[in-house]
Image (cartoon, rainbow, N blue to C red):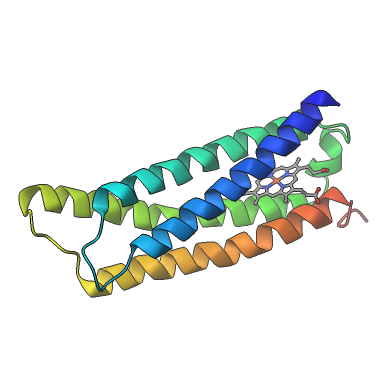
Length: 150
Ligand code: HEM
């Protein structure tokens, strides 16, 4: 019971932390002022670490949760949740690659500023991730209540 409680609590903390990190990236990515590249890199690293952590905690909840593994593994809504999670993860690679590229360019050209079109593309990737984020708690709540079991 205590393990389940602690895992559930940490799952929610990771979820909130990731949402905050995504919102922070959005706020930092303004095309109209110099980009704080170091802060963007740190925020993205934080986002990625929390994604790894929520995956590990989620897997632990599947393995050790009181409902038993089959409750989740036999439910298509669980797999839809995993699919959305992986899709959001794949989209999140796009901002990461750009932040790394921009930081590398800024090392060679101190007054470097990314093209406005590139910033817009990264902001679009963040919007797509936010849409996935909106779907995840819905799928989670449905899955937790056994919807999807025939
Ligand atoms: C960013 C990604 C994720 C978000 C936003 C998220 C969100 C949530 C939320 C809000 C709940 C509570 C549902 C409720 O009790 O109504 C939950 C429960 C749960 N999540 Fe996640 N989750 C994520 C990733 C994962 C992953 C990757 C896994 C599995 C590998 C996972 C496995 C679980 C399990 C097993 C529960 C417990 C459901 C129950 O009480 O029966 N989650 N999740």
